[in-house]
Every structure is written in structure tokens, then in C-alpha cells.
Image (cartoon, rainbow, N blue to C red; front, side, top):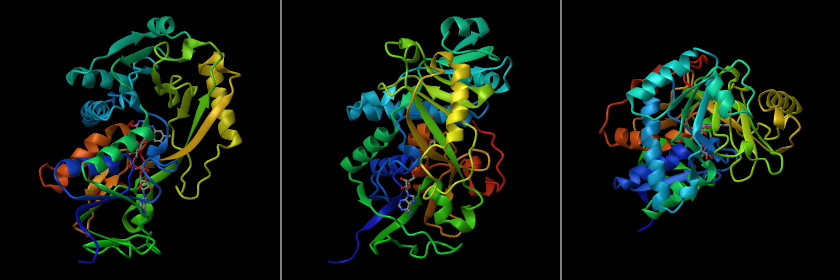
Length: 390
Ligand SMILES: Cc1cc2nc3c(=O)[nH]c(=O)nc-3n(C[C@H](O)[C@H](O)[C@H](O)COP(=O)(O)OP(=O)(O)OC[C@H]3O[C@@H](n4cnc5c(N)ncnc54)[C@H](O)[C@@H]3O)c2cc1C
């Protein structure tokens, strides 16, 4: 017999959302095809950096605390089963802020309610424990000892390898973007075409295309997925100096500065990045080189908060993009007019850790087993950026 093989589900996009969706669907017996234009966790994807924070604190946005808890369990189970334990680093996560920071206060309540272990620190405690940080303006802290870092790029590869092992087919293929502002021309109710003319048939399609979602569905998403430029820096630590490695330095987020970073993992140096949104970009054309003004800004910052690194060399950089929704809530919903097409994205700078929970949720929705979560629905996505989820 000739003709394309029919799958239950074709997942387009093998970043963390698509990879976990494919794995979860296959675990439930679905025949799944997973496509990606460039490969799992590639350098231009949002999932493609070395490392991503997994933390439980989310202020009052409790759903993400619960999803993080659930996801950490699943990440660890996957890594244990595939002998990849080193892909989670329990560095601990330290939140720092000015006194009476509302997000820290709300975080403590939610962590308590959900049984997440944490330690509170006051100004003196922070100074005593972390003398390598200049705590100017900082007077309160929370440390999550069980949280840490996922080695992102390799973690996505591990998810895809496991998905393939249990039956998912992976193919390198790019779905052509629509001409103009319409729908994807090759997408019918049963098939979609790759840019080389190959045809993929399935009952259901899930588009987990990160920042590219806005390019594939411009009519509905051009004004609802805001891709922003985000630059990441690694500072070389002084030779023989253990102050910037775990356990001396955990992963940290400084709310006053909208800045976060990680200790020296795998000897790559102190990772540091600003969490504030950069300029809007196109993920295909934005420069992946950091600009001189970005270097100057981060150098000033490092000299201020980590004075011992004032003259440290920048040993690596990476330019990525956040794929923000209007407020930072994910977008996971059925397409408004194409009933067998689902959209899964809008990770908004915090989605990586939630890959397992996203995969479970999409699977539950496709199999009609769970109720939709209001805040992920398309109808709740605004066209104006007003970030509230951190
Ligand atoms: C600098 C930075 C720091 C971050 N820090 C954290 C953090 O500490 N913790 C955290 O939890 N999250 C963090 N995030 C957010 C997190 O990385 C993202 O939310 C998450 O990786 C998004 O995954 P995704 O699968 O939706 O998108 P992506 O990883 O971008 O994957 C989308 C995939 O779709 C594919 N695709 C697109 N179009 C097509 C097409 N036409 N045909 C075929 N394939 C296609 C792409 O090739 C790509 O591989 C950070 C993000 C950035 C940029």
C-alpha cells in the first residue's frame, strides 16, 4: 500500500512543550509524529540554552507552584529512568527582595499551603550566608532547598529520545509559514505539508512552536505572542575561588533588579541575565550576537551586585527569545476555527520547568479527560502586554 502513514497526533515543534506533549501522548497509547524544523533543543529555540531554573515560588499564581511541584517529580523520574540524573542540579533557589516585597509574601503563603520546603532569611542572615552578594536594598529572602536547575538543551534531547524509544516518530521537517496574514496553506483537516513537499497526515495536530507560533498563525497570534530579545552572559570566576559555585552560591533571583542567575555549573562561569523584556524580535532574523550596550549594562550590574567579579571576563554569551503572552499565562487551547488543531505555547520566560505538566495537560485535553484551565484559553489572551506572572 502506498500513501502517508496516519498518526493519531502530529506535534509540530520539539522544544520542551512539544517534546513532553509527544512523550505524554505516546505513554497513553497514541501514535505520534513529532516534527521540528531544526531539531530538539536547537540553538535558536527558547528551550535551547544550557540551563533553566526550576523553582516553586510564583507569588500568588498558585497553579504554577503546583505545576512546578508536579513537573520536578516527573523530570527526576525521567532522568532516573534514562540515567541522566546530572540533568537536574539541586542548587537551591534563593529569592532576594526589598523588605515587605509583596511577591515574596504571597510566595511564602502559597509554598506553605502546598507543602513546599523553604527557609526565610532576613537582611543579616543574607549578609552572613552570602557575602559574595552586595545586598544593597535587599532585606528579605526565601531559599527553596529542593529546587535548582535543569540542564535544558540536553534535557529536551533526553525527553525526545525517551519518546522515540516508546514509539514516537521524529522527523526533521519545517512546516511552511503562510503567505500573508492567513492560515497555513497546507493545513487541511487531515494533513499538513513540510517545506520540501512531504505530507504528514493525522487526526489531530498540536502546534508547540514557541515564538514561531505567531508566524504560523499570524491572523490570530501576531498580536498575542510577543517575542522579545533576551541575552544571557557567563562570567568567568577567579581561579581557585569557590564562592560562586554550589553550595556556596545557589541559583538566585533578585526581585529589586529583575535579574537572575546561576552559580558556576559545569565550570561555565556565573550565568546572569536580566528578566526584563527586551525589544520585540523575529526568532528567524534577530542577531544572536550580544550588543556592546548589553555588555556595558550587564558589566555595570555585575560590578554592583558581585563586586569580586567586576573585572571578570565574559566567557560565553547567548541571545534567545521569550515568547510572551500578554500577561505571562500560557496559551494552551484548541484553535478557534480548526477543531482538530491545538496551540501550546506562550511560555513567557518561565515555561521550561513546566514541560511535564504542559505535556500532561495537553494530553488530558486531547483525550477529553480534564476541564480546561481558564487562564490558558485563547479568549483570555490580550493584545496589549501587561506582565503579571513572574
Ligand atoms: C533567556 C531565557 C531564559 C529563560 N529562563 C527560564 C527559566 O529559568 N526557567 C523556566 O522554566 N523557563 C525559562 N525560560 C522560558 C523557557 O525556556 C520557554 O518558555 C520554553 O523553552 C518554551 O518552550 P517551547 O517548546 O514552547 O518553545 P521552543 O523551545 O522555542 O520550541 C519551539 C520549537 O518549534 C519549532 N518550530 C517552529 N516553527 C516550526 C515550523 N514551522 N516547522 C517545524 N518546527 C517548527 C522550533 O524549531 C522549535 O524547536 C527562559 C527563556 C529564555 C529565552
